Amino acid sequence: MAWQATFDKGVVCFKRGDLEGALIHMNQVRFNIRDIAVIPKSEFQQAAELQGGTFIIYDSRAAVHEKLGNLKAALLDSKRVIDLAPDRWQGYGRSARLFDLLGKYDSAIKMADHALSRLRPEDVQRHSQLAQLREKAITAQAAAEKQRLSQVAQTSYLLGKLPVETLVEVFTALIGEDHTWAVKLSHVCGHWRRILVNTPSAWQTLVLSKKHPLQKAKLWKHRAKNRIVRISVAVSQLDRASVFAQLRDLSWDDLSSLCIDGEAFVELHQMLSDISFPHTFSKLGELTLLGFTSSDQLSCCLSGPDWNLRTLRLDGTIYMMEEWWQRIQQLKELHLTGFIGRFSMRVFTANPSLERFILNMPRVEHLDLDLDNNAPLTSMDNLKSIECRNMINPFPVLRAIVAPSITHFGMFTTATMADETLLHIASCPSLVELRIANCSLSPSTLPTLLSCTPNLETLQINAVHAVVNEVFQFLTPKTVDPLHGLPCRALKHIDVSWCSDLTTSNAYAFVKTRVQYASEVVELAEKCAIITILKVDGCPNIEPDMLPWFRSKIVQFSCIYATKKDYRKNGRRYP
Image (cartoon, rainbow, N blue to C red; front, side):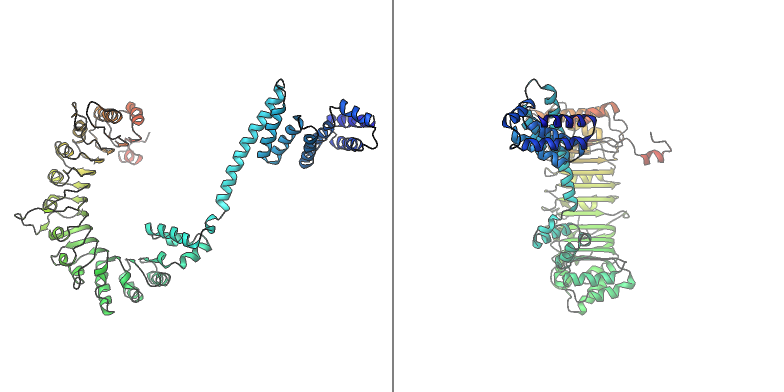
C-alpha cells in the first residue's frame, strides 16, 4: 500500500520535529486516499481498517497544522474528522483546543462537552485533560466578557441613542440639584454641549462672583433667553453698576430666588423701580441677604403687595422691624445668622406656617426682645425643625412659643439655660431627631426629656460632660414596662462622640438590651428598633477588647480614640 509508507514517513517527520516534511507527506496521503478511482476498493478498506478509519489521517494532519500555527487549516481538518467519525471523541477534542486558541470560548466549551460525552469511562487521563480545557475556556470566556463590557462602557456612546427630550430631562434633574452641572455637562462632548446651549432651562441659575461677572451675566442671559430664575450676586462695588445695567432687560417676573449683599440689594431695588418693576421682590420665593447691616435695606422694598416669600436668610447685623411682618407672612424657613441687635417676636405670630427656624448668633450676649411677659404662648403648629447655634442663651427667644409638632431639634455651643430650652421646646412625642453638642446640661435633663419622646430615632450628644452615662442608664432600665417596652423604642442612630466619661459597661448594657428586645418580644413589651449606627469616637474609656463585640452587633460602629492631628497637638507620636 503506497499510502501507508507515505503516512509512516509523515509520522516520523512529525515526531522528529520536521513539521514541513510531515505536512508534505500528509498531503500526499490525503490525495491518495481521496483518489478512490486509483486505489482499489479492497486496498482502501484495508487502509481504513489498519489506521482506524480515514479520519485518523485528517486528525494527524490537523495536529501538524496546529503545531505550525495554521489554526484555521487545522480546524477544517478537525471538522472533516467529525464528519467522518461523528461518534468518536478525537475531532471534538481537537476542535475544542483549537477554538480555545482562537479565542472562541463558547464553541470551545460546546466541543469539549461533545468530546467528554464520547469518551470511554476508563479513559480517565483524557477525561481530566478535556475537563481542564473546558474550565479554562469558561474562565477565559468570563474574563473576555468582562473586558468587553468594560470596553463598551469606555468607548460606546449609548446616551447618543436616547431622544434629545430624554437627555434634557436627565440634564435638568442634575442641574436642579447643583447648578454647576450645566457647565460640567457642556464640556463632556459636542453633542451634549449643543443640547445644553439650546436648553434655556439649564441656565436659569446665575451666580456672579468677582471673576468676570459682566461676561458671565451676558452669556447666561443669552443662553437662558433672559429668563433667569435664581440669581446670586457677590461682585465688587466697582463692578456692581455695570452688572446691574447688563441685567436690566431680564424677565424679572420669572425671578424666584435672590442671594445678594445688603447694600447691593438696595441698589437693585432702585434700578427695578426706575424700569417700572418696583414690586419684583414681592414675588420672590427665596431671599438671602448677606452682610445685612441696616433694617432699611429690607424695609425699602416692603411697600406694595404682600410678599410671597417662603425662605428668608439674613446674615450680618440684624435689627428686626415690626413693619417687616406686615408684608412677610408666608414664611416656611427663617435663617438668622450674625449679630441680632433686636428680635421681633411678631415673626412667629405673623408666620404661622413657619416650618424651619435656624438661629446662629455667635456674638450676641444680650437680645433686645419685644416680648410681652403677660401674652399667651404662640403655638407654632407647623414648626418642624429648630436649630440654635453659638448662642449664649436661646431660651428668651424660644420661651414665647410652643411647637407641638416639632420633629428635629438641634442645640450647639450654648452656654446658659440649655436645660430650660430643651425641656420647653423638645419635650414632644413627635420629636424624631435630637442633636446636642458643646452644651452645659444637668444630668437629669435628658432622661426627663427622653421619657416624653417615644418616637425618637436619632440621638446625638457630642462633647457634653457628665450626661451620657445617665442617658444610657435611662435607656437601659432594670425593669421594663410590659405595656410600652423600652424608652425611646424607635431609636436607631446614636452618636455620643467626645463624651470622655462614657464607660464601656453602660454602652455594653445598652446595646445588649436593645439587641435582645429588637429580636424577641418579652412578655407584653413592644418590640424596639434595631440600632444601626453607634459612634463613640473620642471616648477613651471604651475598652479595646470590646470593640469586636460591638462591631458584631451593630452595622455601623465607630470608635476612633484619637486622630493624627490630636496626637500632634499633644506632642505625641502617632502609633
